Amino acid sequence: MALEALKDVVRKIARSSTVDKALVEEIVRDIQRALLKADVNVRQVKEISEAIKKRALSEDVLPTLNVKEHIIRIVYEELMRGIGEGLDIPLKKAKIMLVGLQGSGKTTTTAKLAKYFKDKGLKTGVVTADTWRPAAYDQLKQLAEKYGIKFYGEKDSKDAVKIAVNGLNALKDCDMVIIDTAGRHALEKELIDEMIAIAKATQPDYKLLVLDAAMGQLASKQARAFHDAIGIDGIIITKFDGTAKGGGALSAAREIGIPIAFIGTGEKVEDFERFDPAGFVSRLLGMGDLKALLEKVERVVKEEDIDPEAFMKGTFTLKDIYKQIEAMGKMGPISKILDMLPFGFGMKMDDEMAEMTQEKMKKFKVIMDSMTEEELLNPKIIDSSRIKRIAIGSGTSPQEVRELLRYYKTMKSVMKKMKKGKLGKLPIKGFPKMGF
Image: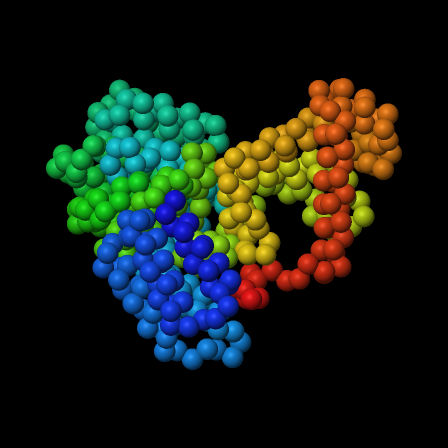
């Protein structure tokens, strides 16, 4: 992903021996290349880079920051200003209508959005008013049933407006109802007319445009057409993972003045998050996004999955390790979790390493499944003979069992240090102190 190159900008500043005009010009060029490669609008790239250069060379350094932190702060603030505001949808009764072209991921996004609000404690329902794509009905129905979301659709009907109205009536006991609408391969007049009719008949509280991150500069044309037709309240960017053109969708939102509401970062329903400009830019620069990480934990991990008190006292056992691994599995790929951790706490992990780590965690679970209750609760009793028995029972090697035990001892040591406050304070609020 081209925007990932922005992390190198921060690393370059951190590793530089001196901060002068030459370094500022160099990092500005790096930022321009990264943004242009990501398909950010040329005019916006120019505005952002010129603002960074001007401020970096003219502003006085704040007393609380050193020179390097001062430059990073300027980069952070100007990138955030370039992206614009996010849309925060309150947790209360509302109707949401999703629109967009075919292939943008509307149907999956409908389910993701419904589950997001369901995880927040709202009773959610979805309506499939896509009468053009035959698979849309079955796809949304299956996703809704899988996640305990109420569903309404009329498989044999071709009247999208009537389906949407009937759906709202059928799901009137729901707090949040999301209407999935039809897309096309292009901005056809018939599509726009149908969107206008559905919006007029259902009077949604929010009309959200679903944009594919890979659209690049075409995103602006699409956003403009839908906004002129029905008045878009917010944008959801899908497939914002592994694409070099995500900046096009960001540019479209800023250019037209529409806030971004959510971002889809993967194929799973859980790979979905509320867009927070500050956290998003922090992550782009490699400074993490602890707020998003904590929200993800809150949404995905149940209280019974992890016992926080066990982590902070001497009762931390292999059973807690087992729960920890299961909880991490629910949160998605480990590489995405690491992206949310700031410099100094996370580590760079490529796809191959991340996959190996995921497989290692799965193997650890298999090994623990071959242990007795006593061994899980008191790992100290696991001697050579027990290691051999566990390895045979789990189909692994004694070396792999010992590796698990080493991992357990490391985690226990980390928890003890956290209890004693020896790991320092995490920079949760405001601009993070980098410590260069």
